[in-house]
Every structure is written in structure tokens, then in C-alpha cells.
Image 1 (tube, chains in turn purple, red):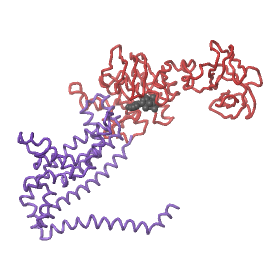
Image 2: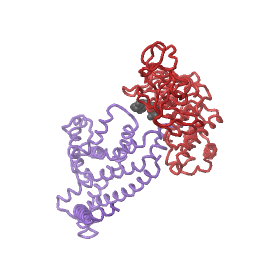
Image 3: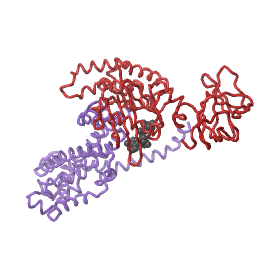
Image 4: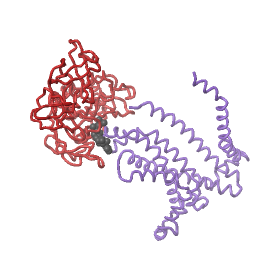
Length: 280
Length: 348
Ligand SMILES: Nc1ncnc2c1ncn2[C@@H]1O[C@H](COP(=O)(O)OP(=O)(O)OP(=O)(O)O)[C@@H](O)[C@H]1O
Ligand SMILES: [Mg+2]
């Protein structure tokens, strides 16, 4: 009874808080999103479509997809390996590894990009050697992949580490004691146990891989039709006052964000359900 | 025959096991009993091959298996929290050990299914094969875990607190049933427990552990009636422990000489152990331990009498036959331990 009363008394405060939050979200998130679409569509659908099928735009989209197709699987492998090691084994330097995984989150993306320039650039540490062997990393696709892999590294690992820690290693030990080899244990026991968390991490990782600007901008060199990803392409068009073009491509990124959000909520729902529903 | 030779194990600086020696005959049902942190699970896992010792050897039938992995040792392991695969049905769980075999030794799908069903009826869960673990009760899950471990036809069954997470009634039924299963299948079994009642009731022999060492190995009778150390005496069954002085062949407490022979024990401080049911009460007579009755209650088939003595800070517990009239609270009586044991002072 007293709980209900306490809630009623604060009805005004509650309305203010919810209203405030909604207004804030509307102003800072929803409005810009709508603006992106409306700017892109300002001159009608045909101009919108033309801006997207334009040669450089298509090249940017293709490059972005390639980057995602390379870096997401890489990070799935790295992420599973790292979280497996951290959650199921004790070793020296474990806490260092956990800290390192968070590094891309704590470093400014521009700095992350610069790290690779310092390593692989013409005046960088490995620059002369790379040049001698005619290998191009900076201002080329490999550099963009490296920067993206670095930036998106934490997404899968951070999703899996707490999940795997919570699950412990009983299931794996049970599988091994029943005669399963390492691969069978992973495939039949570990992977099904982490699948929803993994999917969730992949989703976030993918969204970031496609949307990353800062680090990629440093290593890309902005060569049109060659090393421009979608976010970089949007920036270039915008700086050239091609607003329809910029916002048309930007709306593709916005759609990606919306799809990610929906998929994320669906996953969260399934994840919670499986998580809570099948305890020991 | 399983032989554990001079096994020791450290976790960092912490010595979890120290120089463990143990021999187990085929067909035996062995309990590892000890308080939390005494190293029971660690020893069980080393025997299984889930953990590896720092020193010493594990021999199966005289053969050193120290370097063999768990799958090569022919053991079945049942985990405390069941560790069932939650995304597989009960039948798939039970069949797992068969379905991961190499192509050559793997039975067909229908054979695996039939075998799983057979094992499920053995553990009295026939017809539940299509359920998921989440849809079973704790006792049922534990039996699935057991069926799964038995599916690979182990010689040795290892169980880590198999009934730890179950309520008292289910525990009791399940442990009787496990004992039967053990006989029926001709297994050798080792189970971990910190419940002494469980160990005393089930096991052929009990291994009492404390702080990473074996304190005593023996039958329930030996461990209970003839404890090898004050720890065993205290841990297995209920005990009264009194700090006493040995002087000139007499056992003294608070200046009173008790009618208990000191035996070979050297002069000096010592501890006197006796069980609650090994005490007789009397009016004032020399040689008894004077106590004031502080509490009386009915405890199963007897009266539990609690008394105080000025020189002892613990209550003294006494069980009296339910047929006799109990004393009254506040009454001054003397207690005569009819069976007792003297240990050196200072031991835990
Ligand atoms: N993986 C590990 N890392 C570090 N210390 C450990 C590890 N496993 C066990 N220990 C320590 O070793 C000691 C013995 O542990 P063990 O699990 O064998 O005890 P136990 O007798 O099974 O206790 P319980 O009844 O609580 O299960 C404990 O002090 C424990 O903290
Ligand atoms: Mg244990």
C-alpha cells in the first residue's frame, strides 16, 4: 500500500522525468535522424537513388562491405579466443590482457589511426621495409582493415567474457570427460552456450566496422573510388556542398543503425529468455 | 585397483593437497569426507584427470595414468551442479559420449537413441528423453548427469557432492538408489561429501580429509568408534571436547579428579573427547564431572541434555534414553563418560 502511495505522490516528478528524457531523445536522436532522411530526399527519390548508384558512392559502399566482411570474422575469432582464454584459464598477464582489450575504447580513434601510420607509414617503423617489398598498407585497403579490426576488437570479447565467466568450465569439462575432443567441445557445447551473446557482439561489431570514421580517416588517404568508406564519402560530399549526395549515403548508414537496433532488441529478448529460462 | 601415491598439489602458494596416499579396491564405494576447502574436490579431479598433480602418481591397476587425459582414463565424472548441456534434450545429453566417438567406434544414431533410452530407464527417467534439462527437477537432473556419465561405460565413477544441491528427503532416496546402482553395475565409485551422515551410511570406507591431508581412512565403524585424531573425532559424529590436565596418571578438570584412566598419556595439558550417548548421569558421586543442567529437549529417539561446568566454555551435550525421566533444568548432577578418548592438547 505504502509503495503505491509513494509512487502516486511522485507522479508529477515522474511525468517530468519521462517527458524530459523523451524530449531530449527526440531532439538529439530522432530529429537528426529524420533530418538525414529528409535532406537526402529533398530533391526526390530519383536524385536520392542517383546519388547512391553514382560510381564513387558505389565504390565506397563496396569498400565498406569488404571491410566489414574481413574485420567482423577476424574479430569473432579473436574475440572468442581471448574470452575463452580469459574465462577458462588462469595465466600470468591475464589482467593485462583484459586491460588491453579495452584499449580501443579508451584511446581516441584518431590516435588509433596514427598508431598504424607510425607503424606502417612511409616514415614509420616498418615503412622502409614495406616500400622495399612493394607492400602498401597505409592509404590502402589493408590499413583500413587493420584500423577497423583494432577499433572493433572489444565488441565481441567484452560481450563474451562475462558470459563465459559466469558459465564456468563445468560444461566443457563434462564434454571432455565424455570423450569429446577440443573441436567437438567447442562446437557442441561452448558455441551453443554463447551463441546469443556472440550474435549480439557481432551485431555491434559490424555496426561499428561500417560506421567507423576517425581511425579510418587517418589511414585511408581519402582516395575517391579507392580508399573511401561510406562515412568518409559522406564527409567529402558534404564538404563539397553536395548535400543530397551526402545525406543519401548517410541515410544508408542510418538504416544500418536502425536495423542494428531492432536486431539488438530482438536478440536481447531471446538472450534474456534463454539466459534466465535454462539455469542450472 | 586405484592407487594414489604421494600426491601433492598447490594453487599458487596454497597447498591444496599434501602427500596423499590412498589405495582403492575394485568394487569399493569410497567417500571423501571433510570440511569445506579440505581438498576433496581437488583430489577427485586429480584422480579423474581434470586437474594435474604437482608431485606423485595416480595408478590404475598398477599402471601410471598421470599423463593420461580424462577421456583416456575410463572414468565417469558427475559434477556438483550437474553440468548438463542445456541446449540438448535429456536423451542427447545421455547420448553425447557415444555421439562424439570417432567414426569407427560410433554406434548408429538409432543405436545411440536406444542406448540413451535404456540408461534413462535405468535411472528411472524413462520417457523423459525429449525434455530439456531446464524442465527437470534437481533430483532428475542429477540422475540424467549420472546416466550421461554411465553411457561411456566407465570402470570408475567419480561424483563431486552428488546430492549437495538437493533437499534432505530426495537426498536420502537418491543415495540409497545410487548405492544399489553401484552394486548392480559392478562399479568402483568415489564420492565427495561434507555430510558425515551420508558418508557413514553409504560408503564401504571413508577417507577423512582436512587441510589437504588425509586424517584417517577406515570403515564407518572404525572412523566413528576409533578416530585416529582429534580432528576426526570432532568432525565425524558429535563430540564433547574438554580441556583437561593429566597428572600422575589421573585426569583432572578444574582441580577435580575424574574416574577416567589416563593410560599411557604423559603428564600435562590434554583434551578429553566423549560422545553425547556415552555418558551416564548420577547424583553426587566422586569421580564424576559436576554439571548444572541448562537445557533439555527431545531429539529424535532420546533426550538431549545440555549442561555447564565452570571450567569449560562449551556446553556439554548428553543423550539420555527416552525411556528414563529426564533431569530438570537447574539441577546439579555429575556426568560419567563411559567411553572416552584422550588426545594431546593443542591439536585442532
Ligand atoms: N582452481 C583453483 N585455484 C586456486 N585455488 C583453488 C582452486 N581450486 C581449489 N582451490 C583451493 O584449494 C583448496 C581446496 O579446494 P577444494 O575445492 O579441493 O576443496 P573441497 O574440499 O572440495 O571444498 P568444498 O567442500 O568447499 O567443495 C581450497 O582452499 C580452494 O580455495
Ligand atoms: Mg568441493
